[in-house]
Image (cartoon, rainbow, N blue to C red; front, side):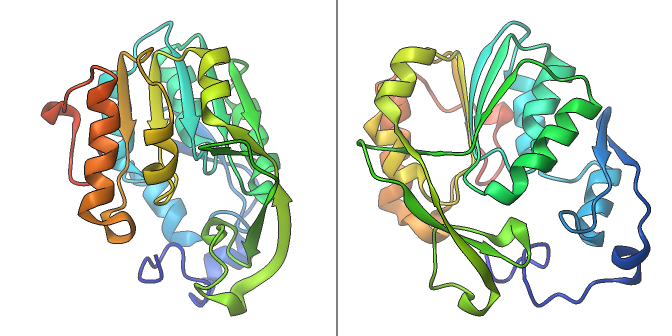
Length: 239
């Protein structure tokens, strides 16, 4: 994480960060609000040239179908939820994002694209019922996380985020597709759920944190749900 130039707090702002006008970028058919507080120059460039979360976006576009019900874990800036709504005409997306500072931006992005089928929750999914957990907001909002040990000098606020048990959410929602990018928490959340309702899943793995045993646990959870590895839509850590 610390080596990602798009996430480091100590990356100096470019002149473009200081003078970028309000308005929209255009990315994969979406209008993305220009907000230097959320999107620094390298990330705006990736959005413009279509490489932003490119592997995950391509996997989603190959996998998600019109009318699907999607459970989206780790909404980020709301890009994937909007992509599924606009480009794949899904019936519904239930989207979770732990970072409270991103929620207003996600709503702006969805509104800019006429997205009405996404229900956004500022919460965490957990293996079992849990009290709210501390979430550490950093100067670079997109580097915020549950981890207080990495880059502690970048933390500007700590907030308690509500938790929802994964089993309860699955029982109520019965999604067709899972989209998951939760920075290593997949090793705890996914093995705890009954995913037999799924037709497909797009998961970004984080082997640098969960190790081979964690990757195996995620694959075992999906195999237990009747899913198989789909190489044509997979690339590296995105499976």
